[in-house]
Length: 341
Image 1 (spheres, rainbow, N blue to C red):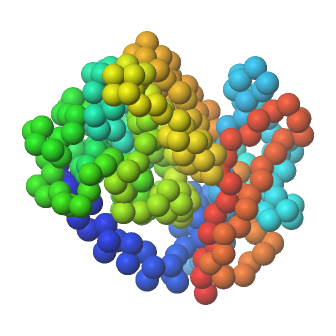
Image 2 (image 1 turned 30 degrees about the vertical axis):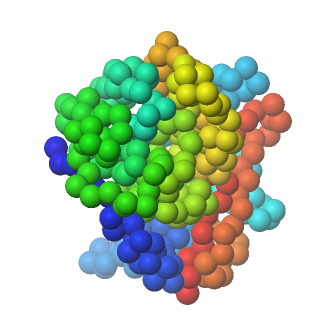
């Protein structure tokens, strides 16, 4: 298990992100082209198949009814996809429960979580043992005044559990943490930086289903990037953000403060990327929240389409996915960035 301070190269990463924008691949193009057949024909004997780059857009979606029950019996004809208001043809469809998941677990270790961290460690440990399967990968990152990679991608749940148990409140302030250096100008929690680093540095080059699961009150007062930058990093890497919003009223009352802004930020992040925000105010609800997230991860439809607008202009394209039943709520990402020429 390695511990790495991640924020030091953040500015360099932001600079490189600008350089890479001109060669960014369409969402999920590379792995989708290999994971799904592009035609029904077979290459003739002795001939090599012709490989063609296509602007294939994948959507991972969950559907719930008005009672919040997962709907798992829909078919291709039950869905409609719109890009910037224009209906698209569904090129492929499947109900996906076994595709590997690549997961980044982000644990808020700022002072506001001091009464909840033990319960978060317990629930998080159970989550990785019960949810992760063979070929799934996960990492563990903590954040307070800095972001620290406590366990890199692995399918070994014992390594992940040890990393979760290693988390400490305000480790960057000298509580035995792993960060060797701290930005002297930083005096607050770096939630947005942590999400950006997880998506841009860690998840961007992974394939298949990708998700961030963050345990936090979503309060940020120290990041170098903005919330919009963190969301864009998730959208460009085709990553869904799920947030278990842990707001400890005991801490806020004891400090003479109140929370509220974090909930709006968390809702914005999850809505834009197709994830869920679940509010938790005490230890008893943590395991239930993890169970709901695991349902989201394991009960998904996969749809793909080739955009009618094939311009390689780098613009953001808005996506709307709906079913033929208005009472159903579809959870999927709100859009993607087109590749540049």
